[in-house]
Image 1 (cartoon, one colour):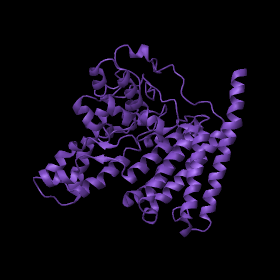
Image 2 (cartoon, one colour):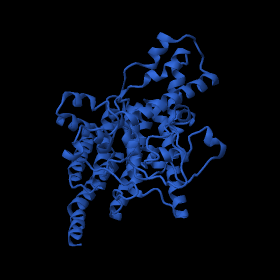
Image 3 (cartoon, one colour):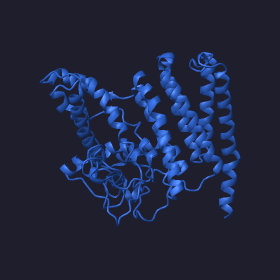
Image 4 (cartoon, one colour):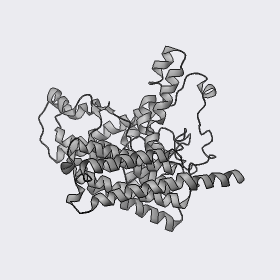
Length: 423
């Protein structure tokens, strides 16, 4: 928990700087692929995913440690050779877990968030799941366990492997020469994120593109087919927590409505997107039928709301950085309380980004929760030890946030709705 948190304190600013550089570069080139609201939503998704990972809110049915102790044929030391083996096995594991997430209905829920952006940029790489609470694919690491790759090697290699998947989420790098034959490139991954019929469910590899070529899921980016991004059942929200559970909720409601027990059970294991017969007519959901002619979500918004959303994301990032860097000071179980506050924060300000009036309720809950914590502990999780008046600053921020939310929900949204009706 603490070690991974400290790694993220180092990595998060690097990712943020690269996102800003991409934004500036796109602006200069006249090819802006990073709309502000979309970027805030993506960064917010990354923040809550990282909180979930640091807190370890997931269950592994069979641990890698246990597998090594039971089936290892050799005893290997942690060295360059075992790290290389571990990396290749993890990439193989990543290919199959990724591919299955695209092909099986209930597994798509944990991956839909990553594809939910209707843009393609570095920020969308941060859209990672918080809805996956059970690790189902640890068995794919059996090859590493058989030859005795130490658990320490796997534990260190997995986050490195994840971070290496960040760079190729961009439109601005076209081709990378002969390395296109070996590594996953931005061109390959643009194909993967596209919803064009020519590109759907292709290029599942994560670092080495060889897996797609070996298992028949490779597709070159075609010069005459420009990738269109998103998911065919668009999320239509900036709230990453909502996006994380949309597909699951649809499956639950479809299973409840299904007329046969066969459909109630098999819906979970059918191909992604499958619904019982005639459900698209009886219980329609928004679906993109023409990928070249649909309206992207949230392209019209108030500049004041945009700037406020950016401010909220940056403040939340600072609060998370403090949490990761001070886990030992915060301690258990308080770190989980802090995590709950972060989740509530992201939910509240992304509901406001969606211009939902109910965001005032979420912000009121957050204000009450935050002030209650300060009154109960007499401090903001030990922050006064680092600099004085921290408690007053946090209290002032919470009060300001509530006032601004009241302003938007009580006046700004009403004026915009009136103008829309008049037009």
